Structures are given as structure tokens and as C-alpha cells.
Length: 97
Image 1 (tube, rainbow, N blue to C red):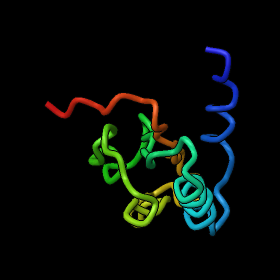
Image 2: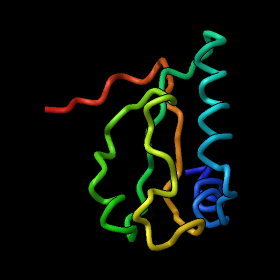
Image 3: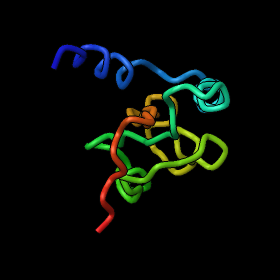
Image 4: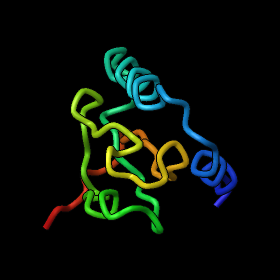
């Protein structure tokens, strides 16, 4: 995939203490501006903490309701590899069945 390097980059950098607030605020603006962003999904680290593995990777959140990353029980703290990803308006809804 052409953007694998970007995915790896986002997962590998240490998160700023305000990562959740800034990232979710940016997605919130994208939604309010009637852009292509419909919501937020959390891309869970495959080797992550039990708290992150308990999250439904298909779940779609409003930026106001998304769990804050890093999760409170994450042993990796600011080195957590879970990241927010936008859910685009043109994406079909994920089948939860």
C-alpha cells in the first residue's frame, strides 16, 4: 500500500500529552465543515495492551465520544501505538453482524 510508511510513522512516534484533544478537535472541525469526515475510528495496536485489544476495531465514534488515547490503563503510555483514523463519508458502514 502506498501509505504504509505514514501508518507506521503515526504509530511509532511518541504521542504528545494533548494528542487526543488536538486530533479529535481536528476531526470535529472536519465534520462541522460538512467535509468528508463522518466520524473517528481507533486503529488498535496488534501488540497493544489488554485495554486496547478490548476495543471494537469496527466501532465508529463521534470525536466527542471517542476514548482518549492513550487509554488510561495502557502500559505503553505516550508510546502507545493506537491511533485515531477518520471515517470518511463515502465509506460504507461496517457490518456489525
